[in-house]
Image (cartoon, rainbow, N blue to C red; front, side, top):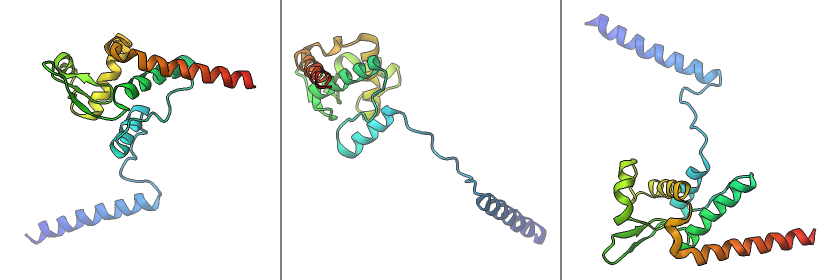
Length: 162
């Protein structure tokens, strides 16, 4: 019995010594978290501020324009806030891009997404946007096309001032 206790204490002591050596060498035994993707950063900002904000929407002009449009759609649908709206006879519109549960909950679930979870909802909205373009948001088209046109006018004004 004495030997088992002694061996147990020795093992604990060994772990403490190795851990101290690792810290002294400047290495952390716990790996640092992986850098966040822009969508993770945007979703984290939504949990803190209640609004979906894209801090870095890309440097490539076509990519930047694509994500600006995605953001504009969210702004028109919900002010880029995670909201739930009842739709008479057709489920609920959920999230920043107002994904309708009647039409999309089964497909989202097959992909492993729960539309009531903000991160899943945004990822599913991105999936829709990348596979169907702006078609799911045709009802708010006048709003987000207006935002795009205004941005183009501003860009032209800035370019002409240079």
